[in-house]
Amino acid sequence: MNSAFKWNLLTFILLLRGCCLEPSKTYQIGELCERPTFLSTYRKIDGAEIISKNERNLDCTLTFQTHSILQRFMLRFEVLNLDCNDHLYIFDGAHAASSHKADISCRNTKQTVGTLFTRSNFITLRYVTDGWGTDNTFKLVITAIKDGKHSCKDFRCTLKEFCIHPDLLCDNINHCEDGSDEVTGILCEDPIDHNIFGMSSETLTIITICVVLMMLACGFGVGICICRKKTNEDITSKNHPMYSDANGPKHLNDYRPAVRGCYNYV
Image 1: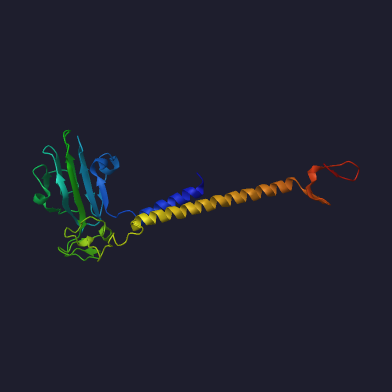
Image 2 (image 1 turned 90 degrees about the vertical axis):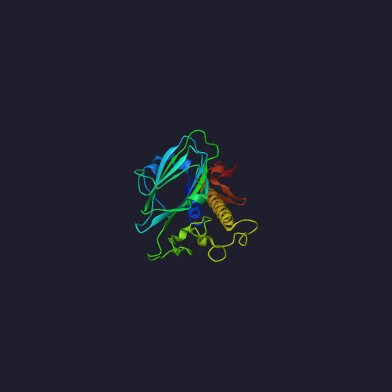
């Protein structure tokens, strides 16, 4: 793999990360529990969507932290369907210690749980499941908010005037609870109106970048071939000097002396 291809690949990855990835992160809780580095550190987030789907024999603890001590967390379930032997314990703090804020299990629905708020700028989740679950599912939206009494240089939600990070706008996740961060036509583009040839703008951007990089790679390859051909011709010319006679230019190496002082062409 030549250096030009590596550079083009790196450029494509950086462009993709910068223009096409969603700002709000979605995590599969089963995958997070398999990462030792994730479990051993506090993950600073502006917003996240935690998804569970039929995890078995799990006992996992995750801790999230806001970027500022003036912030706290708002939690809201979009989907909640747990087995009675499975529990999601929510702690208002950096450790799964003392009493929990909530114990979510089969007796709970997203309506009965409602919206939860922390008092600190940490939230700790401990998820415990057994080996029998066949329909254990939840989707938990976590958002770092700043209360309305504080100054807000970012985006202020409409209903409760919470301040959230602008990267959480228009990511198809309701972070404000009232949906004001996902208002189509005011903040967010209508995906139907911005489709080109039946493709979203993000997909078209990726395709365009790929085509440009392929053209650059082809041009680079053609340039290398031309340079190598010219170099080989120069080397041949130096090793085999030319001699001109009445019949035109010929390589001097193709002549052998027949008579003293003369060269005959073979």
